[in-house]
Image (cartoon, rainbow, N blue to C red):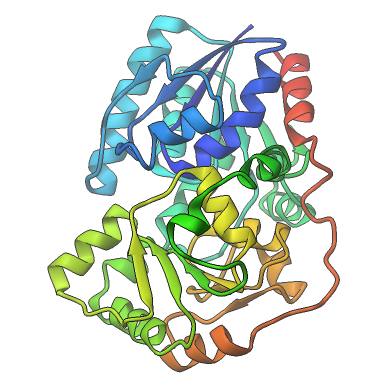
Amino acid sequence: MKVVSVVGARPQFIKLAPVSRELRKCADEIIVHTGQHYDTELSQTFFDELHIPHPDYNLGIGSGTHGYQTGAMLQGIEDILLTLSPDMVLVYGDTNSTLAGALAAVKLHIPIAHIEAGLRSYNKEMPEEINRVLTDHCSDLLFCPTTTARTNLENENICKGVHLVGDVMYDALLYNRKLAQNSPILGQLNLAPKSYLLATLHRPSNVDSPDALKKIITGFSHIEYPIVFPVHPRTKKAFDTLNISLGKNIHTIAPLGYLDFLYLESEAVAILTDSGGVQKEAYLLHIPCITLREETEWVETVKDGWNILVGTDTDLIIKMAHKFRPKNPQKEHFGDGDASKKIATIIKENI
């Protein structure tokens, strides 16, 4: 049984780790890295820390427009699939790598399995929303992390091949949380636990819009906490281009490896982010999350009161950074930590 796993971005490397461990017990897995995240901090570090086998193929696509990225990936993945003739292609999440992997496979009549199927923000201006919808409609096996995701698929008349398995990022967090406790990052940054906020920012709607970016950074600059801000390459480029001034409370650092970042998350007072994966990690770590978007695919985190959507509203960003401290009980929306085992078993049974 031969399975090709297509990945290209940081969240996908995290999801790949637990799935690959289980999948390799029953299948020959070939990893294709598209190179969507191509620098060391956002790519190789994750493979090393998470003990993921080095990719069998690295397409090295790098950055570019959505059309360029997706087209180049599609061509590269298709060539690999024609050479390997795998039994299944496994894709993760909602990036251009996800869509390219799905399109290459479906046109060659190779079955597709989609991990994190059924997520919806219902905002079609988000490139990720288009990617996840199209991928779901191409897929043969759809692995849903939550009951909400399964319901979303039912509402689109996708019922065949749908499996509620839980969230593989929860698997990864459980596996790596103890390892993260050994991280020296707080000492390196001269920080005490529960003394700072953690921020991430990378979505085009926030970073590529000068108005949105300035509103967010103005909000950050008026928060009465130190803010640790690992800066994504896309965000750094925007800062340099727009010559944006950061408040003295904002401490920018280079992108981090997974274990250092996980430890920073776990010891933060709260997290400010536009990342879907970070919203979910914050919830699982019981850390308040202030989301710099108008909507989220992780609606459970909002319904339970641990995540609040503030968009780019400067005043609301400042207010919630100081006041949003939920104490509500949480629910087991994301499974029980064995999603990867279930996925490997289901793939084995369907090839």
